[in-house]
Length: 146
Image 1 (cartoon, rainbow, N blue to C red):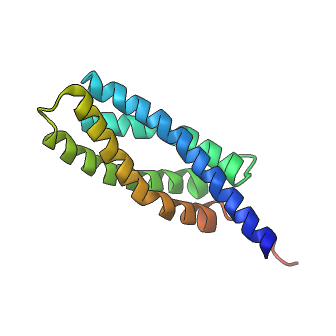
Image 2: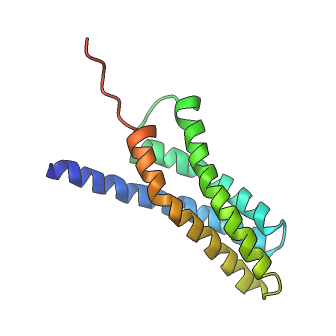
């Protein structure tokens, strides 16, 4: 039982590390696009989330859940994308609201406020996503009894 608990904590730690990497990547892209006003804050959030999802999927699949071999489009990629889309939807709503509220703020304050809105929304989704990834998406399948 202790070993199982230790393995779960280790997996949660690795998941947190992967989330940190993908969050840093996403936030750099978001900040650059918002600060330069290259796109609207909503489009910047969408682009940043897509960019951060790629390393998140690969690192979670390989390092956190130790999955090797070919990726299943219907069994892994599509469900992972759907989970990411739920975080994207919530964060896009938060970013849109903050962007509107901070429209006349100085660039640095506006950028940081939009980043905080995005991070807060994704934080809400984070634990739910871990449970879904662990219990459903990347769950180890027991071989069928013969």
